[in-house]
Image 1 (tube, rainbow, N blue to C red):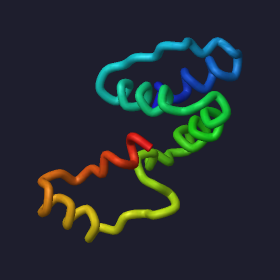
Image 2: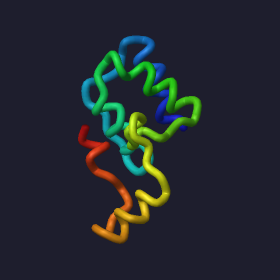
Image 3: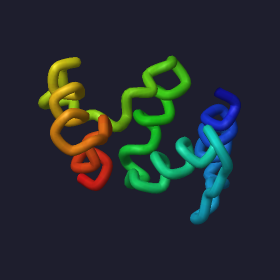
Image 4: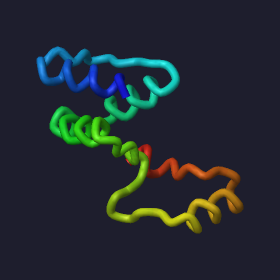
Length: 86
């Protein structure tokens, strides 16, 4: 993803802006990056560059397919918003 490469290059040069926005996939990258601290960003960007896009899941408690199906049937959505807001 070019979005991540640009952010990584800007961060490396200490030129990362305080406000980042985007559309479509760029908005997801911007949203994820803007919810991390300066200390967390290098590892996040490194993971993104190497294809690890699983940023919306709690790594301590990974969800199974059954968890996703159960949530979809119970409340009508697949995404667990708790992991996004934590």
